[in-house]
Amino acid sequence: MSLLPVKQLLASETTGHTITVKGWVRTKRESKNAIFIAINDGSTIHNLQAVAEPGQFSEEIIRLVTTGACVAITGTLVESMGSGQKVEVKATDIHIYGPADPDKFPLQPKKHSMEFLREIAHLRPRTNTFAAVLRIRHALAFAVHQYFNDNGFFYLHTPIITASDAEGAGEMFRVTTLDLDKLPRTDEGAIDYKQDFFGRETNLTVSGQLEGELGALALSKIYTFGPTFRAENSNTTRHLAEFWMIEPEMAFYELEDNMNLAEDFVKSVIGYALEHCADDLAFLQNRLIDEEKAKPQAERSPMPLLEKLDFVVKNDFQRLTYTEAIDILLQSKPHKEKKFQYPVGWGIDLQSEHERFLVEKHFKKPVILTNYPREIKSFYMKQDEESSAAPGPTVRAMDVLFPGIGEIIGGSQREDDYEKLLARVQEVGIDPATIWWFLETRQFGSAPHSGFGLGFERLVLFVTGMSNIRDVIPFPRTPKSAEF
Image 1 (cartoon, rainbow, N blue to C red):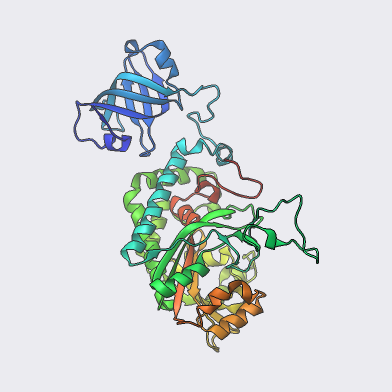
Image 2: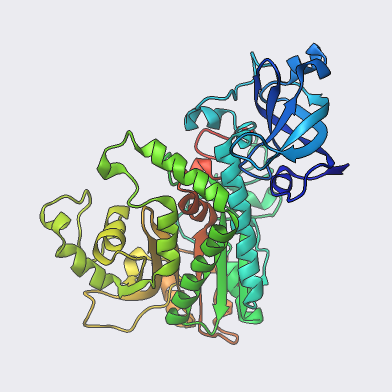
């Protein structure tokens, strides 16, 4: 007798041997001569059917075989008489590990809304949709590590608790052990953080980039892949308070090298998912088609899920400057007919509608925009030389734009000149003393270097075709929501 996952059993080329399958009951259907039990252990989107003869098992056992119950079924693996699967199990023994009261178990064999499933996040991985998403999430995470390892990168663990703000946004979660009912105060009335655990004000990190740069200036090529936190009071379908970031940093890489890496990286990890998650992706594609049937044509996805992924993997990314993109948008039909919701002009922070127009309508391929206005980008980006091609000062930034989602990667060549970086830090209002160590790397063996950031959930959202980022992470953290 062997204990194998459902995925392996369904692919079995031999029959006639005794097996035990363990998992959760998806459905039970009874006829006069047989009881059909669909069992799933999470290893695949497909269920394994077990067939039991009614007289062979007690009524009590059969009564406990309900949707959601955890069971072990032993029997003979035989060729299936029905359609849809090659093999099934002719049951000889059924063991109930854990019953599920059908009057209380919330996941019955029917369609449930995403909103309802978020309320029962402890159970939603048992649905086909969320099990598929989580398997794809795993495959993408594995592909990320494999890609960087195979390309000579070192995995660097950067701090989760930090005293610096990499983005300068100020939207950070504070970390403290102070008694909030008895906060110590200085003579001036401010909170005395010298009495706190770390002796200073600290927060949960918004990015591992700054520390990643330190690693790159010693190991040449590093990447971080860890949790990050933003205290942004946003309830949109694209924002989480806790999410995972992939951030490679590379010494001796300039802007062109950075673009080449970003394009090759996303093509590689998406290609891995296409190769290893075919069944789950096919299921999610069909789910998306069914879901969008009720939507107006203009609100539907621009292309089926698998076609969209192929679109990214098989196309060379179009590269152009921000200034060139603005000129295209100004000449576009939506702008001239005032159909863009947000205005277009040099110096704006491009909105998703602008980015998607460039990708889906104008170039019909993924796009990499470069050389953005300095004023809308972060302090650490390398400043360009003055150019007559742009109306104002620009930086060596790089954003990768995808269909259906807009920006998916943001990066840049980093400023390696100490005086320029210090001036920019002061210009944006950051106290140089809080990042003295970051500035000091520009004084001791500075080198050209670049990097980018990819929000992992944004990647999973794109690959799975899900419409809400809360549905691609097991336990979403959002404003007023920290359940589970």
